Image (cartoon, rainbow, N blue to C red; front, side, top):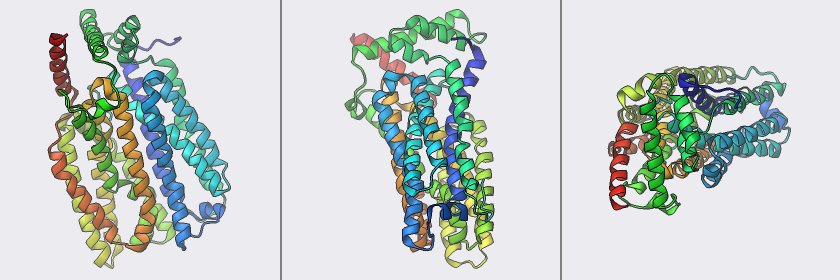
Length: 449
């Protein structure tokens, strides 16, 4: 490798790759939410939003991306461990570039749908891999628009669509300069390379003896895992001494909670919500949607300062309680009030609560609690759960808003409230606690061996 990054430079580069991967999700969310109701987009594809057919087509175009993500995540669960972290991300980036080109050149609904699926498959690869990569490089690290102006030119939505490549192309260069993770190398008996990466990663921060100790621990753990066999699909559901099944279900559950709480109903269809539920005109709805997505971006920095100080579980519990309360208040406001301007702040509060409580935690937590030998498969399947439920929510939201209107918010309020007692039973996900359990597990296995 021509460039040899070391110490914090290497760690920050890996973190940048992870951030770019997740920025792509937010970019797509804000992108579609900003122009799907716009004149330029609907005229290009001949969609009439005043008909049920038009509403369903919009829902399909937006939500089919999640099906692609689901396919990509499931595929990664089968081949990701063999490919390695770098190649898995690289494949995802290349697929997403192809998908972005397909979307930006679309003139037919079918063409756009194919482009969305292809982009989704690439995102599934990236989204399943970068949390694992970040966790294996730095287990204790914190991970973590567009308004319609009435013009009819299709460049209004084509240019932002192809701009996804602004995030994708730098990822290719980053993949070229970072090494594989030490654990993946050790699992393939490339112990000298694993030690070299650990040395580079911790240069200036640890002594050679400390680095060697970490390396020995990784090699020993890998040896124990091999002695009991590689993690299989059935191992994810075993109620064994390290509670693999419980950890796996928690990893999937937390991904399910974030989707069923209604966040992507808000993010993808913010323009629709402002127009249909609040009665704003098209221009004001587009403007408010842009403000909401800007707030989403700004609020995403808040968890950086809280997630390690406060902890994963307290953030989840406090913010999901706020989300449930906001949805309950929103139901009453949409049903009764005539001053729709007073309703808008509820959407901003809900968005902020989700961002602080869930945005970083749902991606950090699964990689932390999953057993090491099951981390890639477990992380991929939990990500697949996220995407399939994302599809369900994104697909049903337009007809729900159109047909049951304010009652839609009741559903999300009840679901958010239901998660509180479940999350109460979760353990804190700091790697230190999980590593203590891993040490106990390794000690027990060494004695048996």
